[in-house]
Image 1 (cartoon, one colour):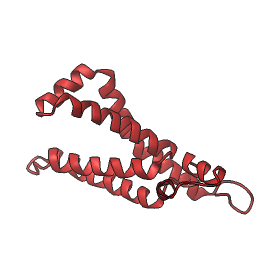
Image 2 (cartoon, one colour):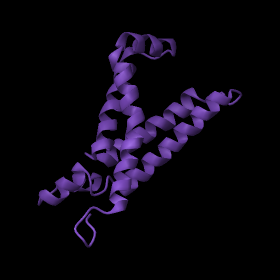
Image 3 (tube, one colour):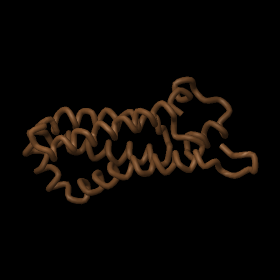
Amino acid sequence: MENASGGVRLADLILLLGRLLLSLIFLHEGATLAADMTAALDAFAKLGLPAIVTFGVVALQIGAGLSVAVGLLGRLGAVALGLFCLATAFLFHTNFASQNELLHFEKDLAIAGGMFVLAVRGAGSISIDNLVKRRVKEVHPWLKAVL
């Protein structure tokens, strides 16, 4: 959205910054895992997780991270990452006797909360979703719900 003088509103810039900051952790972690897939597969195996989960997590972190960052189907990306954070918190960070695990649990919950707020709010005016809404005259109803 533009303000009265035709420029971008501060709120739109802050929303963009928030999306970029929220997506950064997932893009970084996904790229780190992908860069050394052998180590990632070994780490996931030690947790009792099969290789397909490793590939799924990498794809989710990079795909949904990019979705949130650029605002392309950003609501879906945000919901996916929010649910991923909740699952991670409750499956891997519930040893509250460890201060470090408690901190990871709380951070996962906080990131999930941010993602759910983003899912409700949408990617904002500085996004591919907004560009699609402005340029495409007829948008299928299911797509309109996620843009």
